[in-house]
Length: 373
Image (cartoon, rainbow, N blue to C red; front, side):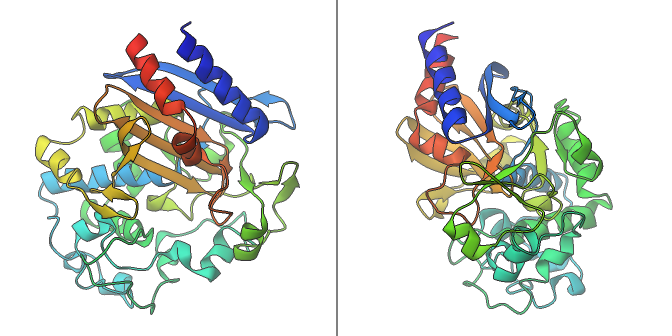
């Protein structure tokens, strides 16, 4: 085992011991997984150690999967990127949603729609992630849109970047409308089955029983208490975290409802990067970069400068999980980090998978491992 592998294992183990019950990481080079490690516990109470093949929520990495479906449908002439979504979606779906009549598929994919995000609405936060959570509730996709009906637009379509989960609720509904299949069926048909992603699914009631799934935790701090509140179904654990394992991710759906493993996520991003899922024209469209806060955004891919090189990918953060996946633009290296702790609505500095990627040396060590192999 190389020194860089030992260093990365020690780093991940220390993080799991101090700040995360459990996390997993995988590294890919070319078209293969070359390294993986699971640290900490999937269930500390029952002494169930975390393994690299443990299943976690991947949050908004789901958006890349959905973007691939949309771009495949564009390749097959089901839709065009620059026509309004009102061309296809029914008026009752779009009723009282800001900009809905004029916003295009491209606007949605790039977060330039100006449509408010249901994730930012106080009532939604209380109902879906906080004090009013009902763990037995299975959310229907259009329910989230009800939280933004009648809200003012954040800007005109195409004018500015505003990250919005509402965009992907609409894209998920568009996929179902055009194909006459469920989003889940299209994910299996077009991505999950062709790539043999055996531990990846859009979370449903049945998948909650999977024995390879980690327990779910969330950061508990004054920010979270103020913004979300604590449901009776949550259990307060040591080290300022909540056990939120009773919840399901149906509320996230096309915006963040996929569960997976670090290996599957890396295999997916390698397939995308290597042109196995989209044709060259679509890949070029996906990487037309526009300003996006402190980074750049293509069609559901972020591009940002890091201490260890420019990276392309996406982070994810939901109740009970956080994740990120990136490939480096100038080196043959891709990585995914998945954890069983979410930090949405907690302090902006709360530990999650994306803070590991940004603040630790995982990117440096991952690229060294790729060079070693």
